[in-house]
Image: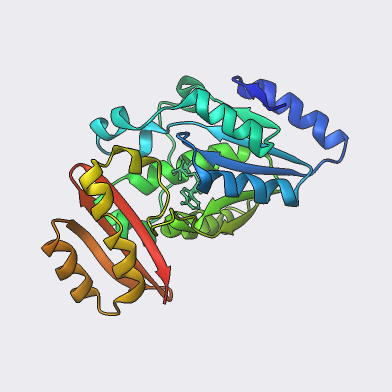
Length: 254
Ligand code: PAJ
């Protein structure tokens, strides 16, 4: 049975009990609207730890656009069913008032990587991500925390933060899970029109098989994509595009 926890204090006292029993804890932070990508993180955590905690918190500080925050899919009932069948032990739903009792007065700022790639197009985004992840990691007190390579820049920034601040939790990367047609699974995919959903498969296809970023950009624009960037870095090819008002990101090894 997955146990629901709405109060941070309740988790902290439970965490104390688990420590007494010498249980290892794995942690999967999410914003809900869960899919197979999230489930793969939960399963990895389960295979490596005695107990798995998942958090669901749609973090307001990482949305630079209030419309995007409002439209973010919320599918609580389905999420709980999925977590139950994945075998998650605890789900934490912290309240925004508790997470941001300081009214976001304290923030984690990274000055170099967070301005690149997605950061160049989403000012303040990674500040919000790093701040909430630091809070969540301190609350969870997990041995390991699991992050998807789909959001590779996010993973690199979190790994760097954990090192910089001597956090005790090990940051574990997990491979990107894709739909059968190659599109990286994302909570935002459900917001694509059926036309755009079909067209979206071109994005991973070109990232994987076309070696020249300018060529990829040109071909995407030809097919009606708005391209934020296609760039190579860290031995990977990264891309961010928009179809209508839905933003998609992806990256592949090169
Ligand atoms: P969210 O988008 O819900 O993603 C939660 C975790 O699932 C992240 O580590 C993300 O990289 C991973 N994930 C999402 N889609 C995936 C896929 N197709 N394959 C593998 N992993 C995937 O990322 C966030 O939430 C937030 O920024 C968060 C870290 C929770 C901070 O608010």
